Image 1 (tube, rainbow, N blue to C red):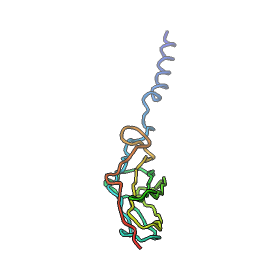
Image 2 (image 1 turned 135 degrees about the vertical axis):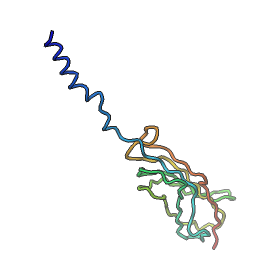
Image 3 (image 1 turned 90 degrees about the vertical axis):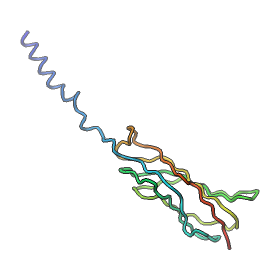
Length: 146
């Protein structure tokens, strides 16, 4: 009987750390960014110009490393709209930016940006390794001139 009690106590001591150990769990301290608006440079592009678009932070978040987004450039007011569509990723905790060449067709254009997922090396609040993000003003309009 003493031998059984001693064996049971030894097994309990060996098994205890396996049930109580949570120190290897990742911390839930990543916070996804949110975005305010899209700005372009130059602000009044001419046909053939290379434009840089930057998606500006509203809140920077913390401990994330990649964000995905897509954008569409369309020409309005015509029967045949001009579309340029692309999906991209930005690596690093920085404001995403991309470039495009302004079409040779004069007119009014809209650049629409949609934010996608954010990835982090530690868990986001709520426990997911990726989270979605948003942009308040994801559209910008401009006129292409000579």
